Length: 320
Image (cartoon, rainbow, N blue to C red; front, top):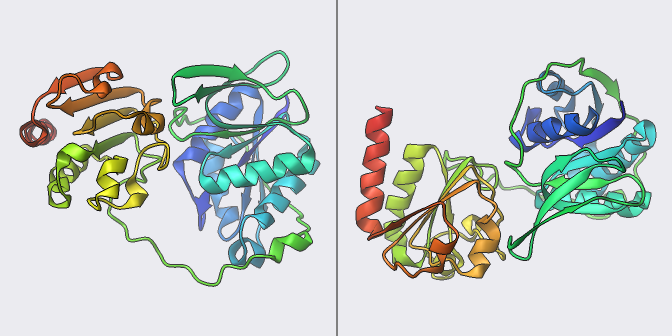
């Protein structure tokens, strides 16, 4: 069976959930070979093996921490030359898409970004994407070279599938451009205790109808009761009610959770583009004619200041 490279997103050896989802998808089209680089790379092997990695290629060097994405591209190119895989899968983060694009150019291959599903095909992997603000679903494949595919978080379940996970050192030669842009300092992001927005299984978002920064407390309360991330529409972010890092939409972040709850959001196309691939969508809005209701699985016509607190209490009582 052909091997499939999976680029590992980890922090000091702690593997992030999108990578485990990629391993599930990789097993559909071949045998997963994980590529982990940077500090703690060797420590990822156990988790990766539990989720189907037959081999784990690791490399560590100062370049991975001190410089931007090019050293990671060098490593992935080295892995590609060593393995000659049927495909290369990369998490669809901002960094992941840059790594994938640079790799595709280097190896002369086609690139598919933001896939939401992946299946085996007679002529290579077939990726499913959402196009034109998720108004259409497309299926496509790369016709030249090794397919390089980035996959959105929450596109596949995390499934245990124990494999050998043999750790092998990956020899990486860094190109001249690898040290062209250096990281001078880092500031840790303050933790809210909530899941990362793009990786969360549940997202609760607030929009213009929240009517003020102070009122986002009720959105946060519902999110916390569900163990969810908090999002915001562009209108709420532009008004200064919530940080830009939490914006969901075409000019913000794209999310695909199992459950998306939109509170006080009208459903403008800009917002829909960032959340329309959510598995189940619930909207709370007092305007029965709001465009968001054309999209949802469940709609509640009502005042969010009454509905959301009641929903929060109901969730808490059932959990209690």
